[in-house]
Length: 367
Image (tube, rainbow, N blue to C red; front, side, top):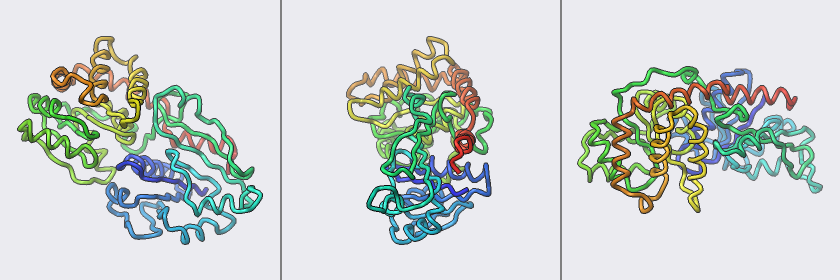
């Protein structure tokens, strides 16, 4: 089976992180699959896999065929060959659109019926969300401008009514939490002095991930005269996974690290991507509602308030109270661990996204 995965790196490493994990898992499930990963942003890919060469139009890494999205002529020639055999199944991730060369192959004739004689199936792998629309849109078909190009949605999520999360090697079961481990900071920019002071007062050592948010937090740590701070280098994905599992608490952002935090069972705080009209609060509230049944009422109320302050601009929160909440969380991690672990166990009952995806593909007889 030929599977082509499209990834356009928009913000840091989350997009390529998910697509890379998706590609590896699909190859692992059925090694006979030919997985073509088409990437706009090879430099970010290199940062999480140092085997990637930014300058190559094509390379094979870990059994995956990697193509440079922006190399029009080379990709057009490869993917149009054999009546577009490599395009029989396309996974379009995170509403990234399609490269110009792919549009030309799929929709090249004048009457809009496509330039290929074969039928092409596009599966839209959307952003991870706990919002209700994830269940409503899951497996929902949509139209394209060609009768030979079909499209359907496949939604990652946190419930059995979605495709679930990618559960790959090392994530099948919960690891024993390292209660004395460091704390990971991997968030966006904000005023982080109250958090830095709380980390200092908790006595926890801190690991700081690369990317947006690093500099603002390191500057806050300097102001707080915090000494136990280590700025992490860029790490391969498997190394990053192992590092996360070694931590006692996680402060994470985005989608890739969120999914790993949810599966880890480690107490964590999530900062959603800041959006206009503070829509990130809707996403945060939706996830907390899914998590709510796994916590006692008072514990959930505290987690809710803490997450809310992390997702508000600093001007909209009480910095003194925010600092107290951060310290209370760090000093009481064992109190809240049960809820995060039960939530993590529940996610595994939904199955692995890639296994569910392959079952879906075979069920509707795409190939």
